[in-house]
Image (cartoon, rainbow, N blue to C red; front, side, top):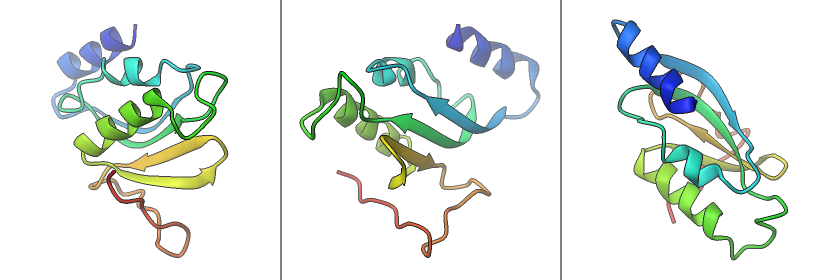
Length: 109
């Protein structure tokens, strides 16, 4: 379903389609959903991705590692602690940058 939406947007829009905000909370399938998004075909300015749930409760969580690796590969800045149980990712060219006085991006790990 998500793939079809992105395909529709990318074939009907003359410029790169853009979403300002995308919240992803699918109880442990976040990495799977992210793998279906073509980040070269659509720009998502800000993503909020759940990183702690009943399937991912401690620091040794494979899905969390996969999500963080994917978002780093796509060039997004990661912020922790802004939203309980979620990471926030901001595209480097987004107009919605988070000021350093609010939060500092986490290094790519």
